[in-house]
Length: 95
Image (tube, rainbow, N blue to C red; front, side, top):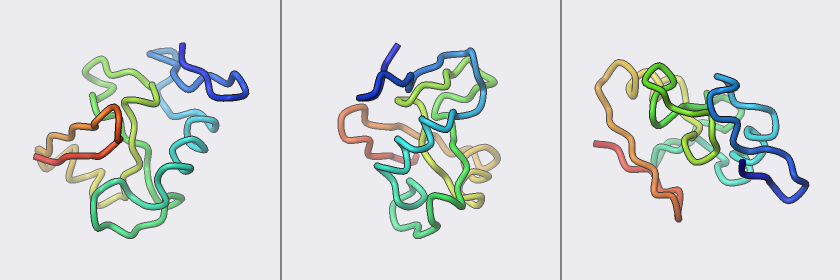
């Protein structure tokens, strides 16, 4: 289990499908906008996306989540986008 500075869980594995309030706050501290480079849609307008899809066994862990605006969230799911998140820099790559 990964905890933040106040010992709040940031990794919940498969116990929950949706991001917790603590996970959303941690993501918002890193991302002011959608994680797609150049997108200026504000964080509060985004969905939290699992890099490895929940349907495919992806976990609701901080390292597997990024905020995506509706347009980019649909493109990721329906447009065949492959997303990769660098674990150190959290830089998102789209192929």
